[in-house]
Image 1: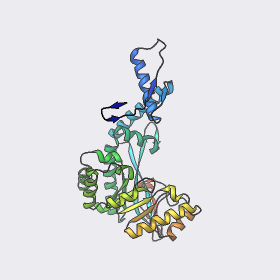
Image 2: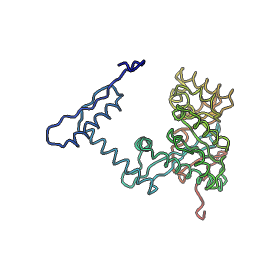
Image 3: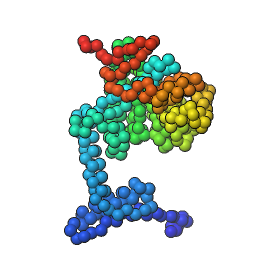
Image 4: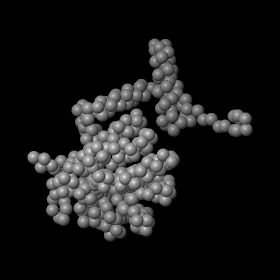
Length: 322
């Protein structure tokens, strides 16, 4: 259609519900609305006919969202930690990973509840909780003589709050933690709308002394651009590239290229998803400074972490009288 000087193209997403006369108009509207949202979720520009599975999925989604709101109120979330080790296999950074210890559902995988936290906006409150708990755990480990930094992931939605930097820096001060005890991992998707607000937020966090790492490097469209625009301290090579090492020629070439580029730019590099010694040996041989994956340790609660330093096991648990 033409509107003034503009030519507009419209593609429809259509939800269809058939009435058998047994349900009210309100119920029919609910059903057609569910079908419409299903059409949009499936990629738009298509039709979807209502079926009972759509109602079941919507009910499960609402139930899960309500359970997550209760989980935030009742502090049902826990942190698990996975080490990032140096070439000698010694831990230097522990990545904090959110888990939900539901009294009804057990330990819920993050892939089940993290998307709901993000879609509902609850991820902002969850991130603040994670950052506070990470500050407390870092202080505990430092008090025991373990100079371990804790890495915290930021969601793209975190950057939509009015003062992300102020919120995190206030938590640091309240918990008595120094910026050097933490580091922040930012995914490329958080930077897709890198307006002035995002740049100012990252600038304030960087100026406060919090190291910034670009997560899942190499999987997006503009990672190199972001390295030029933002003052990142390091990058994390996505597990997709690590999984092919050392047999895939493409993976070998890409990882070597990333390591060479990072070296010239003065960026620290962490390789994610290291699952066997062959991958680890290739990465060490090619100068990758930090490795992370199941080959070294699975994510565990702080009290169950079993690590080594100088070839000796170290105890990351607080003493009984602590």
